Length: 536
Image: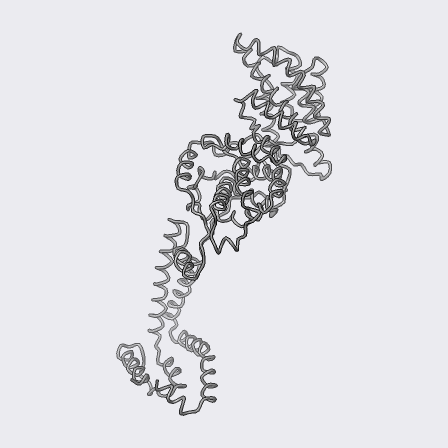
């Protein structure tokens, strides 16, 4: 059947229904297209753009509803799930273990204080480290809020109600409340003139000592005085509430001194000695978990590259019933990454899929990133580090800084670990359900974290915030398409003649390259051959 007969029948049908206006007979290849465009009425353009706007609007509504419910684009999901395998791609994303995720999520979704601030287990020495930074840069690394929290900690750990009975302790009770550093140091010297006071030596070691060696010397003097007080109060602790409070205070003082002495040994390069001191301290006082000494031990064992002992410590403290930390989660990820990172290649993994060991490593990284999403940027050196604060907010930027400041060297030491982290950490946010507040493996991410971190971190540091899940491309595309076609329909209804002229000019310009090619083909091919092709 002749194609032009069909075309004429179509045009006749449209004229009968008001879609086309009558015109001259449409014969010839060159004139048919322009004749067809001239016969289109504004009513046709209004109907076309209105229908397009309606369809794109329905797609937009459905996409938005699907994204709000499932956190992903329906079109994108269908493309990845069904079209990519047909094209030969391999989905290398590792599914989470449902048993593990459900059990751990149920155990962690408990009533917790959202923005509880914790003492940094690896906090630096104020005199030997923080003050030296201020002398060199002129910047204050600690905020007033952070130092105020430290003052409250010192009053809680190092004082008790019976301090007024001993003159030196009474002076130190006032010293811990002083805001002026020089006044605190003067009060500590005054207390030492009366007797050997362990808390006075602690204050001088923390704030007056300008080197780690000097701080260690003062802590050793504090240890001698603190052990004597501890033995005396241990014998009298059952004689009354007052003696029990004294013993509790003396215990806190002794644990603090021994922990800081272990940290001095670690900073001075005597790592094995530091590990022994920490192990002895954890055996002697197993119930004092508030100091988080195991995190100091993990860092020291990683420095010794004693990964078997690191795994043993993790087996004890990486439990669903215990509070998590970035040190626990990221150290567990580092150990699993160490088993596969030296041979890991993203190109090879995309072709063959992930092995069991690689999948375990990726799941461990996803778990760590969900707990604290700010750490990877510091480990990958995408963001500059600053000195860690004296207090941290778990899952916040302050904890990420404190972890990366001490553990970046351990990640660099494991070949390929940072490369594996770089390739996989962003995939965590595709696994977290939407809204992100629901959480996945842990309790929901606290909303107030950013505000609390701004109080803990200095003004010159740009606080890292929780990544926002961006709208998928197809939602933005359908929204733009719907708006554009709706605007065209409205303009065509209001200005039919003008929009008709624009539409004809646009379509003529659009088909101009095709007309040019047709003319070139006609000039090259013989007229008889071209006539036969048009009949086909």
